[in-house]
Structures are given as structure tokens and as C-alpha cells.
Amino acid sequence: MTDRPTHPHDERRQQVHREWEECADAWRKWAPHFSASTWPVTHALIGMLDLSPGAAVLDIGCGVGDPSLPIAAQLADGGSVVGIDPAPSMVAACKARAEVLGIDNAEFLVASGENLEGYEAHFDAVVARWSVLFFDNVGTGLAHLRTRLRVGGRIAVSAWAPRRHNPMFAIPARELAEVMEIPRPDRNAPNPLRLSEDGELVAALAEAGFTDIHERQVRLLQFARDPEDYWAFLTGVSMAFRRAFSGLSPADQERVKRGVLRALEPYRSDVGVELPAVARVAAGTRSG
Ligand SMILES: C[S@@+](CC[C@H](N)C(=O)[O-])C[C@H]1O[C@@H](n2cnc3c(N)ncnc32)[C@H](O)[C@@H]1O
Image 1 (spheres, rainbow, N blue to C red):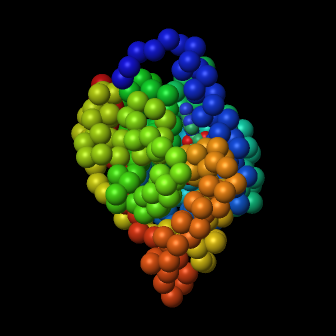
Image 2: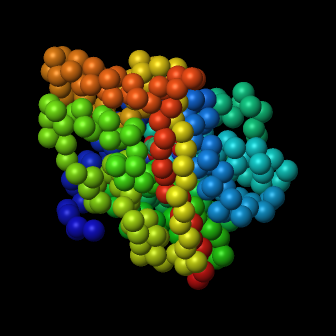
């Protein structure tokens, strides 16, 4: 990782947190939809953690409650979850959803997973579903999370497979590329395709000091009622797409939208639009 002065990094961190805060309402709105389409990843992460019934679990970047809420439900007889996220509205949504679901063994805090100073508990497991990708520095961030595990504790994290395997990234990128320059996914900058190439996720866990590391790919299916519905989902929840799209002229925005809707046509099925997707999940142990 490159070493740059502290100040620009703080600024970049704050900008990322702000951008996620701006997406929070959309994440709340699409939560049932996203939970339903991403259950294979949730199950894979939980399986890799090998949780005992009384486990204490830390969820990093809990968003609007995945996987904090399903894990808390699973551990209702004696276990507990702490979900943290730097976006206050995400945390508020988690609290509201936990209350509605009667989940009382989960607490939610506004915090960054890169800096949990002052929160010294040691957990049996740490989970991070598509969140370490937005750390300013994945290496030091994962090493920091290792210190929040008891010795023998497990971490499980997810990333996406590369763009070429994920039409949900490939389609918008292709259409945006018609009207603007699209930067290549940068291993050193927060973005959803960080750690997506072969070996990157495993290497990041190994560099952070974890052992007994395993990785697997997980297939999932994104769905929507029709292309317009998918467009509403995309423009609501994708922080990266929102950032790029908002800088375009109205004419270019219209062109990108038309292109995306057209590109979704081949994915129409009996139930609406179904997009195959591939994620990576990896887990490791704090062994010392
Ligand atoms: C792609 S969303 C994933 C949310 C949730 N884990 C899920 O899978 O549905 C990424 C989340 O990471 C959070 N995030 C961004 N930077 C973070 C940081 N430094 N520490 C912890 N979470 C962070 C965002 O606020 C956002 O809620």
C-alpha cells in the first residue's frame, strides 16, 4: 500500500462515509430485496465462521443489517452481535429493523472498522460483508480487526468477483464508458471491485496476520421486476455508480440510462429481470 500524508486520507475516509450516508435511505428501502438476493453470501460467511451458540460476533460495515440481523437471530439463545458502520443512518436503520424483528441480542454503533480504539472487547468472530473494500487502507484495517478477535477467533469477509463475471458492474461500466473515462478498479482506493482478482482477498488476510485461510466463490442471483425497477435499485444503492452518474450532463445521463435498460433486456426471465453474480468469500483465524 502506498504511504501518503495523513490529511488527504482523512478527507478520503470522510468522503466515503458521507457517500454511504447519502445512500442509506435507498439501502433501507431495498433491504428486503438485497437480503433476498444475497442470502447465498450470508450463508457462506456464517458457515465459514463456525459459530458456537454463545458466540460474540462483530459485524463490520453492517449497512442496514446484513449479516448482523440473521446472525443475531441464529444466536438468539445466548450469543450476541455488535454491528458497526460509519454511516449514522445505516445504523439507525439496523436498530429500527432489529426492533421490528424483536431481536434484542444485537447492538449497533456508529464507528469505522479501521479505528475501534476505545472499544476493546475481544470477539469470537468478525464478519465483514462487502465492507472492507471501502476501508482507506485494507492492510492496516484488517490487521486492526485481528486485534479485536480472541486468539482462535475467526474472520470472514466478502468481496465481488471481477467485473467480467458480474453484469451488475459490467453493464453500468460499459454504458458510462460511452460518455466518460472509467478508472480501472484500484487496489489502493475504496471501491466495490477491490480485492476481486484471484488471490487478492486471501493475500490481504494473510498479510494482516490471519492463518488457516480458505476462500470460495459464491454464485447469487440479483432480481428486479423489470429493467426500470433494476435501474431504480442501481441508482439508489450503488455508491460508485451514483458518484459517476451524478457528474454527467442530463443528456449523457439519459444516454447511460437508455443503454443500461437496453443491456438488461437479455436478462429478462419469467419472473422479471435476473442477473447472475459471483462473489468471493474468505475466512481466516487469529492464531496468536
Ligand atoms: C456495500 S455496503 C455493505 C453493507 C452490508 N454489510 C451488506 O452486505 O448489506 C458497504 C458498507 O460498508 C460501510 N463502510 C464504509 N467504510 C467503512 C469503514 N471504514 N468501516 C466500516 N464500515 C464501512 C458503508 O457505510 C456501507 O454500509
